[in-house]
Length: 154
Image 1: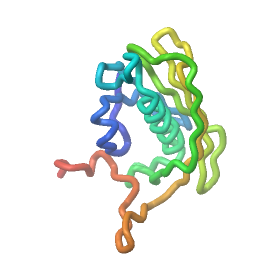
Image 2 (image 1 turned 90 degrees about the vertical axis):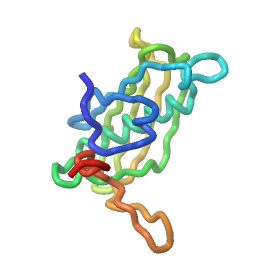
Image 3 (image 1 turned 180 degrees about the vertical axis):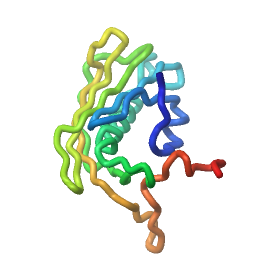
Image 4 (image 1 turned 180 degrees about the horizontal axis):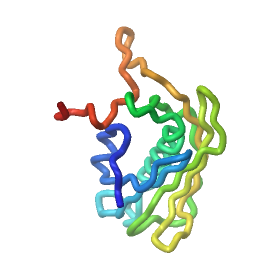
């Protein structure tokens, strides 16, 4: 059963991902691959798989530092290496887990599995925890916006 993401990510909402698990340094995201998610071969686009991996690994890291009051720290991806092994079709899921974390960094691993449990893609990534992200010379935007404080919630 899907649960609410801890923060609002409009791009992920647009893709149609569902958060299945989010606790103790692990996260799982599912998606049923549709035509709009595919490449010219009719299988999941590599950028889609990388996005799922990035979000699953980031949520795994976020789960270790989640605060009920502010949605936890923001994260930015410092580096990510992805290996593609087989096409992603139909129902897929991305699993993310934390290998090691410090006060400022999380080292993670992730994989995308097809409906038969076969690995379609594997990744490792490093994330940096942030409270805000400089978006211009004069503005720092909070990196974590709790879902409950998103647009339309009063």
